[in-house]
Image (cartoon, rainbow over all chains, first blue to last red; front, side, top):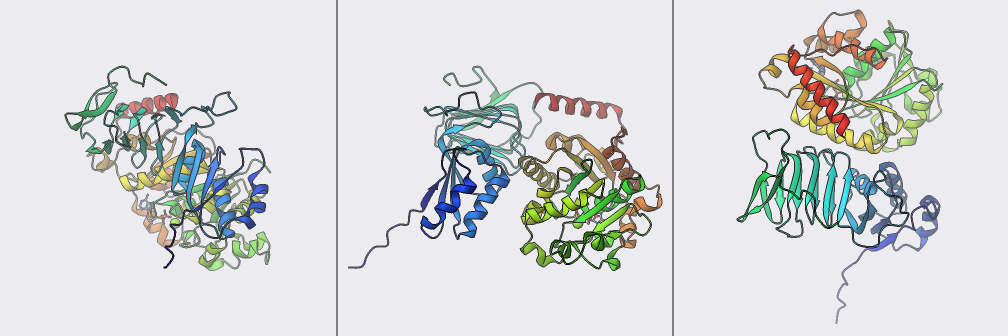
Length: 226
Length: 271
Ligand SMILES: Nc1ncnc2c1ncn2[C@@H]1O[C@H](COP(=O)(O)OP(=O)(O)O)[C@@H](O)[C@H]1O
Ligand SMILES: [Mg+2]
C-alpha cells in the first residue's frame, strides 16, 4: 500500500503580541525551528508600514521562507500588504486604523460588525472585511472595497465595490456619490451608471427583482445595530 | 545641514516626462541660486546625463561611491554652463540586483549635506527601483499626463508614497493641449486633480521645443527660452521655492478655474 501524500497545510508563523518585544529581535531566534519552505504569516495586531512589512518579508526570504498568505487584524498592515501585492486575509476582529483606534488598549472580544476605514482607497488598494464596511474617503478608479455586509462610502465611489461578498443579497452599497466602475451585490454584477450623478444626492444600490438597481439613498443610512 | 530638500520625481507610468522635468527643474533651481544636484535613480533606462548634455563627462558613478572606490566629489559631474547644478550618475543596470533602500538613503544623505535640493529621477513602475528611490526621499512630485492610464498609475504611486510617509506630495500635469481640453478630447485639469487630490505645482503645455532641446542635450530652461514649457518649468521651480505664482489656466475660462479651486478647497476640508 502506498502512502497517500497528505495535503500540505503550510506552517503558520505567529508574531508575538504587538510591542511585547520587537519582532526584529524575536525573529532570528525562531528561524532555526521553522519547517523549511513557504509558510503563512500571522501578524496579529502589529501595525506595520509598507517598509516594516517589506523588511520582515525580506528577513524571512533570506532564511528561505516565502510567505503564501498574510493574516492580520490591523488595517494599516492590511493596506501595507495590499500595497506590496501580498495575498492577505483579515482575522475576525479587526483593529481599525491608528486614526480611529479608540482609547481601549485591548481590542474588543466580540466580532466587529462595522469596520471603519479612513482615507481614500487609491488605484491598487483593496479592502475586504467581514461585517459592514464604512469608508470615510473616496474609492478611486482602480481601488476596490468588499464586505460581507453593506459597503458605505462617505465620499465618492469611483472604483469597484462588492457588498454581500459571501452571498447576502440583502446587502447594499451606499455612497455620497455613486459613480462606480463596477458594482457587485452577492452574485450579481453591474456596471456603474454612465450619466453624471445629481450633486448632493446620496445614492444606494441594492437588489430589486433579481437585478441591481440604483436609487436615492433612504434612511437609515447606516446599519442600526453596531 | 537640515534645510536641504530631497524630492523624488515619479509617475508610475513611463514616458510621461520625469527625466525632462528633473533636468529642467534642476537647471531652473540652480539658475535661481539654489545649490542643486540631480540623482539618476533610473538605473535601467538612465538618460538624465543625456538630457543634460553630460554623457561624455561621466567618470565615476553612484556605484563607485557606494563601494567607496571613489569620493563623492569625484563622481559628481558639474554642469558646464550652470555651476550650481551637479549630476550624480547612476551605475550600470546590474546595480539594481544588489542596491538596497539603505544604499539610496546613504547616497541621498551624503548629497543633502552639500546641496539645497536633491532631485531624484525615479524609474517607472512600483518595483524595487521605485522602492529604493522612495526610501531616500522626503518629498515627492508626481508627474502625469492628462490620460486615463497615466492618471491611474499616478494614483497608485500616490497611495504608495502615502504609506511610505513621503510628504508633501505635489502634482505636475505635463503635455497639456488646451485645444483638446477645450473640445473635451482630453481629461480636463479638474478631472485629474479631482481624482488625485494633490496640490497642483504646475502645468506644462505640450511643446515641441522640449523635444528639440532633448535632442540637443540642452534643457530648455538653460538659455532663457521663452517657449511655454520653459516658462512652466521656471514657474514650477519658483513655486517650489515658496513663491506664489498663479497657475496658468489652459481653458482661459475664469469661471471654470474658480469652480475647480472651490472644489479642491472643499475636498481638502472634508477629507
Ligand atoms: N511638455 C512636453 N512637450 C512635448 N514633449 C514632451 C514634453 N514632456 C516630455 N516630452 C517628451 O516625452 C518623452 C518622454 O519624456 P521623459 O522625460 O524621458 O519621460 P520619463 O522620464 O518619464 O520616461 C521625451 O521624448 C520628451 O521629449
Ligand atoms: Mg526617464
